[in-house]
Length: 295
Image (cartoon, rainbow, N blue to C red; front, side, top):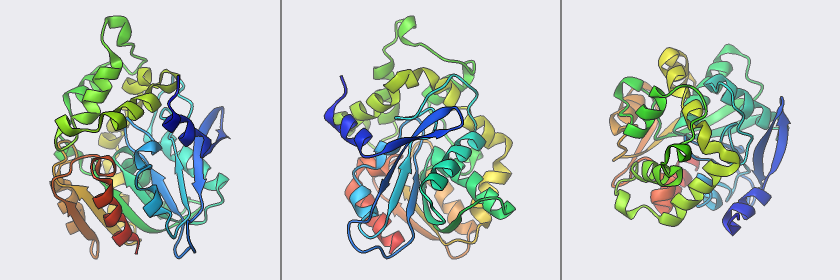
C-alpha cells in the first residue's frame, strides 16, 4: 500500500508519452512573482525526483520548476532494455518540450549531471531545442578517474546488463537499497529512515529495483564518452555554480575543485559536514545554497 507522501507526490504531476513509454513529470508554478527562467531539475541514481521535495519551496519561490523521473526511475516506466545517457537525455528533452520550456536554469545531481552534460553537448552541437541560461551542478561523477564507486555500485556493474532479482536469491532488496543510499551520507547512522523508506518506495515501484543493474550502465557511457559530457559541462558558456557536499564518498570533493578551476568565473560552494545527498541530508543548508546560486 502506497504511503501518503508517495500518493501526494504522484498527484502533483502527470505522465506523458515518450515513444512507447510513460514518463512522469511535474510542473510547479512560482509561489510568488517569477523573477527568473524556469528551473529544470534532473535527479540522480538510483533515486528519483522526490529527492528534491524538501527544497522545492525554495526553488519555486520565484521560479517555475519542472521535474521528472528519468525512464527506469521513480514513477516513470521501467522497461527491460538497455539504458543510456543519450536515452535519458532524450526523455529529458521530451519533457522540456511537453512543458514548453524555451530557456531554463539547469539544476542537476549525480546521474543528472551526466544527462545534463549530454544536453549541454547538444546545445554546443546546435541541436538542443531550448537554451540553458544558467547551471547548478551538485555531487556527481564529473571526472570518472576520481570517482570512488561503492561496493554496491561495483557489484551491479559487474553483473550482467539484465534484470536482477535479489529476493529470489534470499537477499532483502529493500534493506540493501537503504543501506546503499544511506551509506553515501556523511553519517550513515543518522540517515533519516523515513527518507530512505520513501526512496525505496519510489525505486521499487513497478519492480524498478530489478532494473538497477541496467540503469547503472550510464557509468559505462560516462567512461566511454567522458570527453563529450564533461567537456560540454566545462565549455558551455552559461554561468555555472558548483554546490558540493564535502564528505561525498563517491563523487569526492576534488571533483568539485577541479571543475571550478576549469570553468572561469564559476562559483563553488562547499557544504561542510554533508556528503552525497545534500538535498536530503541537510535541506535547509542546501536550499540556502540554491537560493544564493539562483539569486
